[in-house]
Image (cartoon, rainbow, N blue to C red; front, side, top):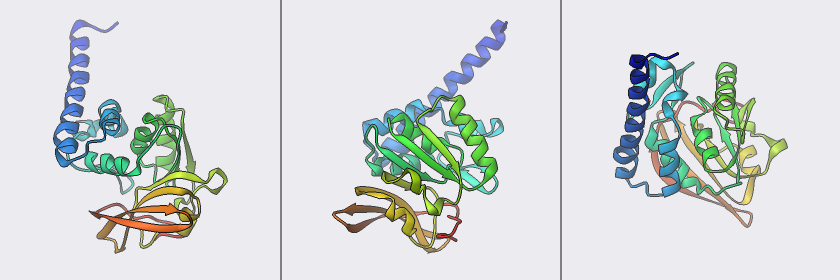
Length: 226
């Protein structure tokens, strides 16, 4: 049985996280021009602090990436919101994510009603994120341990592809697994410290890309990465 004092402390913590999440959306995301109401709604709903170690939960809603171990990070809230908005997600879309990490981006996409297929190359992150997503009842997310630059060909094609790590070029297997029409988001740069976020459109057999600006992601490692 929880004492009154413990109950008040728990309630305060939950309320604090809710306030921080609302402030995150208002001051970091809306203030920078993200206006997609569906994206704003899920960013308010998904408990970002549960995707990092307990010792770092107080940092979860800050305007910065959060380390998740093994040299990987949870992207800053604005970047997650921007990429989700640029994907133009609709319910029941099949989305391939490369780089599961903590599982937060996959949870955001799943909360928007998509069927998410996410690939992680680091076994410890794969095991942790798969367990976390199941515990949080994101049953529309499937997680695979593999080289993400190869995609998930047996489950393709995908309406959308999102890559949350930066490589020197766009992996050809991912282009091949994108539907026509379809959209892919990927950070690309020959210099690991200087990446551009590309939004790639496939339509009627043609590829068109838009430069969405400078970003900094961890390395995309694999057969078609670094």
